[in-house]
Length: 429
Ligand code: C6P
Image (cartoon, rainbow, N blue to C red):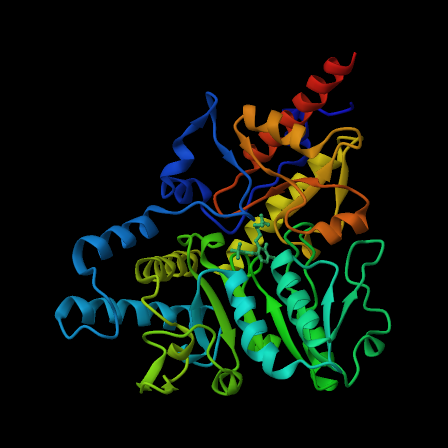
């Protein structure tokens, strides 16, 4: 174990984090004041879910205390206020990802449900026995399982773009990866397991040249960098509010308007209809055609507050901050000779995610020791079992950063990693 002392490393590597006033930001997050096992909480599990600022929590409380009502149906004042706030949140989401209009935005429960909506509706109508669905080895299970189920049901084939040695997508001969049978390419914008940022714009252009459409899983990009779905030229784009300072229970599906128009509804019930007889029904306009039943009103409004918060910070600044934290963490962890780091070497090619392992320690054991030092990371397969198989490991330890993380917290992580090494070395001696 050759770990440098955390503070020595800090002196050698310190670089002021530009872009965000992190001390001020931290004051907005009540949970960051708590301790875990008597140590200050160092929350580095942001790829799983982010913490919530007071502004988002207060938006939820304000809704429940002042204008809690069902939407789109009440003719009273509370119902009108709730409807306006819900639809305003839709408009905020649309502006945040530069969608052409709020009608392109469907609220779901999460990224997973958004992708399932696509496979159940667009997929069932457009994928047949002669079709191929193309995914990548970097996909989260959410962007694998729904396609496995669809292609099995339809007798279609499922293919994957593999990885280079640098654990980026192997796009050599990209033009040969797709052909006229390829109906859709499903690709994650940023890998939750490795942090790899994929060239989604280039992939979308190639897919369109082959007559295929593109679904981008944006669960790990929208919270962390500016996203422009029109510039990306994707057809579907899915993400979750809870990873971007918003409440759990709200996800988003962006779709090109003409696709939403031609797609059948996902779930049936109230809200998604225009006219119902005992025999049949006609559908509501998009996007409400896809939002059956009472939606998650409070949490959608909470997501709107999260977007306000991120807009105030500026997504360019968020990205700069995370790159600096990630770069610093990569340099510090690289000083620990034994630790294997996965994913692209350069912080410019990755989001704020670092996956790593001690070759002889189980990531769960490392995570448990870190937890005792107040450091929350994720350990395991990160819902990427096929990718872990490609890497030849059962799992990794993963630190993931966000707007409130500091260089000092990276030092605590590195110190705790050293403690984990020492703890298990003693254990085996
Ligand atoms: N990844 C992680 O710890 P849901 O659960 O539907 O909000 O998000 C699913 C999902 C889809 N795609 C990507 C790229 C993701 O990272 C996630 C969620 C979390 O990495 C929980 S497994």
